[in-house]
Image (tube, rainbow, N blue to C red; front, top):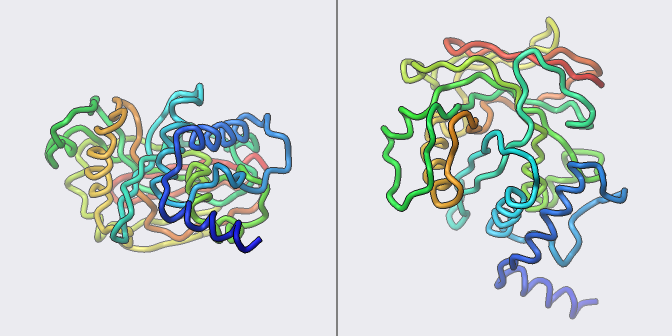
Length: 273
């Protein structure tokens, strides 16, 4: 037992996941999305279990390549610690404001308000980096709600938080996004002073001013667009998610939820379970 643990530990530290393992992991996530996996599925098998953010991105890339669903947008991350790679994760479920979130999309009612951006033109793959101005002109700001999802058979966020690479590789635990109306003149907004309110029915669930993890959410779009240009690029109409200025929120059964961002607008949805 100890010798096996030492060998696995060395592989994880020194060897990146190969393409076959990334495809196996992605195919498992796809089967969980489709509901065809043999339950219960608690975690990735050892032979395709991600052990780094580099492994996670390989799984994302294989998920995009092998899942026969259109990519509606991208979740964008860049390192908060030295040595972490930028991550670009696909978004498959995109709803309009007022739509219903169904049990097929998620089995939990955890959500968060978010400022996202929508591409108003293509930003195709290319060798030359996109400038700040090129990316800024190519996107509009949009009020949004992200709803989370557990595709693995776990009982709580803590179950996944204890194995963060697997949580990321389960497509960042994202069920999808609900989006409102786009605002082209978003650069007139001051994200540092923007008041945002989340509600469940008539009850205020969260309220704050500013508070975005990187202060200005467009920074993630700029970095993410230049990460995506090294892969598949960004297509017109795709949304670009930027992390939430709020803590995670948990709604009650069949709750109506909404988020409003001062100067940007509002968005709403209803849980059907």
